Image 1 (cartoon, helix red, strand yellow):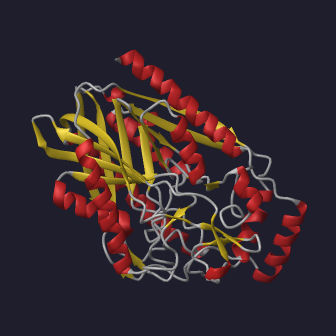
Image 2 (cartoon, rainbow, N blue to C red):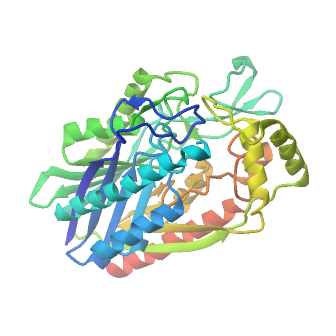
Length: 444
């Protein structure tokens, strides 16, 4: 018998904090709406070893070391193996900083103070969800939403790659360099004793939550938080958003970059989830299993030419990175290249957690996969429904395709991995999915 429980805990700081995602000039100045830690716990009967936990945080990203510590504490307290716990940042660009890579060193104690509180809040969310477990049935479905996400890498008539937030003559744009992924994955748990009662709805969609640019200094849960709020008001239970392979997916960078735009997008995403729910028919006795993959990808090699360029920029910038509403400047890129040069011979470690429930599979990824990679994994998965959870259990940054690396542009220029990463990630992800598919068949 499957049991499921879900909970949310307010993780809004009551003091100014730095905000990850954009290069801002100073810490937050207030709160527009609260941010949360949401925990979904589900498993078989009362055996902790047969349980899985997905935690969604309304922050931009989490360090792997921080996630590992939180997962270890969960295993110690509730007996659920750390390898069966996913801690996913929604990639909110207007949430409290948990890494604070743009903050001055003197302000890092603000980040550390917040992280200490966050650790406690995460444990409280899991405790509440664990306590509220009850017999449940689960259903899953895929919806469609194509008005929110835009393929943000655009080709100009001179061959350069322009990001969709950059001011550029429209008549000189040839078009996007790829396609969006419009899928909205929906996993629903209902009370076994009352199937009209929703316990939790987990929904997966790939797009950057950065309606508000770096000019915003108010904490907010962005459009995913608004979608969750709308769904909970209508459906009851807990709504839990997790991001997907959103490395090339973004909101319209030149329109609706305000609170009204955030409302519109939140309404649209909630509507797509709502439309998919009738197909997420609750089922009995769905086989449940999971597996984990550990591997490495080669680090990016910084060429002598790139390194010399970076040193020239650093002489002028002195390592200071100026605020920008969107994207990053040469000052940031130079600082990054200087740091990457020092570790370019060290492979980048990766961990992926897989969960399979019936014909639905969830696979975590600790970074921002280019959407093409995510779609390739989905297309060749043995499961009918396959959803990737990005920014989960850490973040190695962007993982572009080989083609994109040749084309250039933002994300490619700030990547930390070699172009071989694309093939390795696809191969390892599919191996993980096939392993779970075999396990699921054996459990039927």
